[in-house]
Image (cartoon, rainbow, N blue to C red; front, side, top):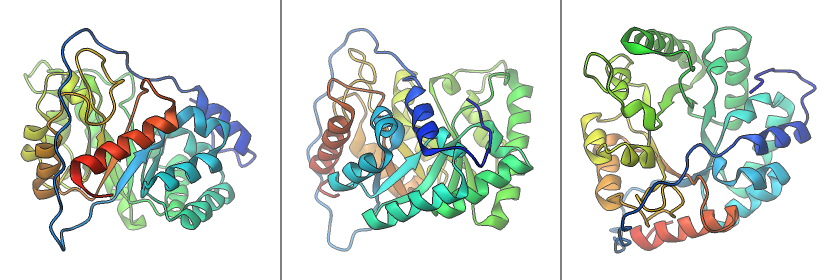
Length: 303
């Protein structure tokens, strides 16, 4: 991906790039899916946690028409969206146009997914800061580690870089975070899982954005992970997974113990909002997003 900050970057170019990013994972082999969990009514006065959509879930629709896609997402009842890496190509004036539309629709953007350039001091970080301030973002999240990151020392160097970025972002009212994939559950030569090393070598206010589906696929326990990192799981990607269909199941159709996980996130993890994410399903993108939100509502009895 070209992370150029060219001011001549157009909406059409952004949308073309947005549609070009491939789905990250394939389906897996057979086993039975778990049934959906019953709804949990919310007591009066309970804290409300906004439910949002990682827009990678509707990447092809976003490529066709960003404005119409945001409108459809808002009409479904989503409250938050998370833009992913191609947003970095926007100019500040275009970001202001997007922010105006978000405001008109009652949507909020609390975090963005970013390439490593957004964490590099200098013009690239400055550009990321400006765009995220326009959007009203809380967290700039690193979507994945640079491909050259290897071994204990390599991951520690990355953590040092991220720790520096945390301090660089603070004066601008922004926090930083890291989004795991399946690979970060692998163990290093010292016996630590990669994600355990990341947690141990970054500040307590550095967000560990949990991708639930990849955690499940790797055979890790998402509930235990949340409980082991109190206050650091401020946002999760609610992606489900099943041995028979991989990530192509809708929210609530896979193996994840959602009631236990969401309870842990809210009571221990420091959750501020949640983001549904889909790699793709048996339905078109917008229908998939709508059905996932309907399943969330059926399970938790809340928007």
